[in-house]
Length: 136
Figure 1 (cartoon, rainbow, N blue to C red):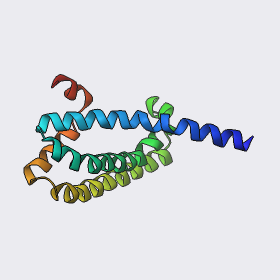
Figure 2: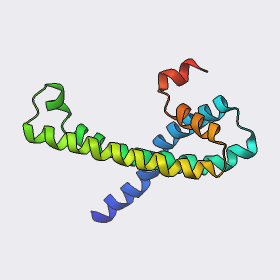
Figure 3: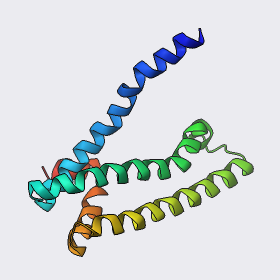
Figure 4: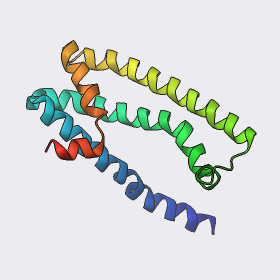
């Protein structure tokens, strides 16, 4: 039984990971098109960008995973005082981690891009899906 579950998890893992990768690929293509990056620069930025997105998602998940766990009481406006304290603390931890990731990747991108390009990379990478779709 354990072997079957382990094999199933291994078999499904690429499918689960590819969904996020597709979103990140779409975001990377959008950023590159908006910045009009030449091909050779794209190839240098790409692995750093995907690494950035992976760490950024992990940082945001500190809060999002907890919020998803208590989604029903949140929507019904019936969270307990303890849940509210825990959610607020998780939000602050998540925000702090996001800031650390962005600062670290500012340095990494700066090794390849100009300060202006780094600014625009983060600007375009943070555009919402609706904004990205309207600029196509």
